[in-house]
Amino acid sequence: KQKQVRRGVKEVQKFINKGEKGIAVLAGDTLPIDVYCHIPIMCEDRSLPYAYVPSKTDLGAAAGSKRPTCVILIKPHEEYQETYDECLEEVSALPLPL
Image (cartoon, rainbow, N blue to C red):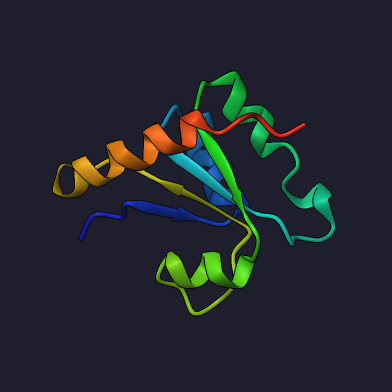
């Protein structure tokens, strides 16, 4: 009933601007890169962790969508808080991309 995953550049950008917390996941095979190159900067400004995955098709499937997506925002929720915390720790430990 509650939407815990935000999909797409417009939706993710809107909720980051509103101050929503979560983990941003971006697809590395998105072309042109100008489509979403501002998202990592927004995440860094708001201290949100983010990570890249190789494929937007895999990212869309993992988010429960039949369509590929280039960015998702995973929100914390009490039902899966332990798993979320584990993922947050792993993503936070990753070095920032150059």
